[in-house]
Image 1 (tube, helix red, strand yellow):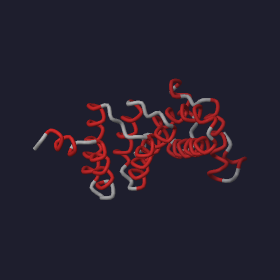
Image 2: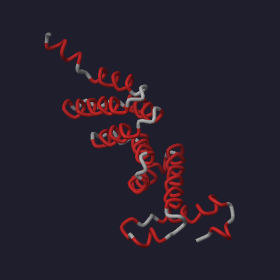
Image 3: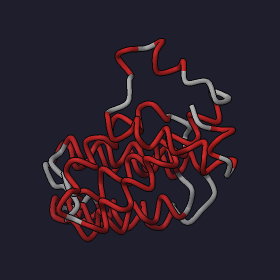
Length: 179
């Protein structure tokens, strides 16, 4: 095979197409392998998917419920310079859907700060923060001691405000559920 033919077999569009095709399947290991191949190719060549392809791939992985591959790809893209808000938000989605709530909350704080001028992304990020905080609250069975026990993981002021609102949303009775 000539060098040009070999390059056409191993090009960014080929890796993107392969990941797009396997993402529609239920074989998570196959999807993860295709994702890792794309990331490795991008790292070694310096060719990173453009914003439109990035958005399409992340949404496809999320919609197909391939959360580990979603997190892996978004993490790699962020490290390779894709710092669009949607990449960070999809990274958070992957973390949340894998149950990595504390990590998701930490990344979300940055996303919320960066999304101040983008109403759509700001709304999405704040909605995710509410989802994360609600799940943390439910997992802690209403104990707020989780924040006091680990000073390094204390929520930001904005997060703390939303945490005090969660009990009302969960049970609907502020007098019974307020901290």
